[in-house]
Length: 273
Image 1: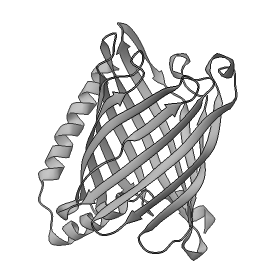
Image 2: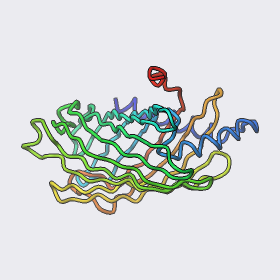
Image 3: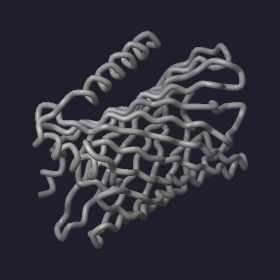
Image 4: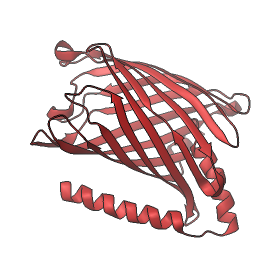
């Protein structure tokens, strides 16, 4: 598995570098710039399939881990301009921390948000976030957790800024007796939209665990390039986290990630028309 992940990383880095440097016709360039603006908005009307490849290093007891996350974004347009957005996340972890090799799926999480039609430039949504105890023994919290979420922000042709807070609490499952999930998180985002489909920004997720009284605060930087491949927008991004506050016993010092996001058609939305 580790060799497969390393090979995938190398192939994706080569592919994304080649795509980012490739020239595109003027029509494709305009389409890529419009797609970059739309994909920078968390309330995007675009359906997409986001693949995240993340390398984590700097653990207290040595070693490293890699996480592969598949996170589709599926918007469902409604009459009047409102929409419902469904974002599930499936993660696979390959860990070699403290000389212990472990691998498997973590718990599946998802959020379901209602985004009402707002004034131009205003971002707003509210809904629920949940985690299902579907992971492997090593990576599961063994509990069903759920809680509220909301999204607020502003967007224009040059930038997107906002906040995405939520609270997740365990409500059922055998893991509650051991350590109940009780976390407040807020993703803060600031994206500068540049020419040619490029964006640069920061989107740290700050978390406070009320069970352990432990905060996690990263410094985040990300850069992305949206381009057109076979008539379809693709977004390629690199990001890095450096954690200035964390649980030293279990969390890494840094994360380096590669994100690959093709825009697709949400076939499920046709079922509700």
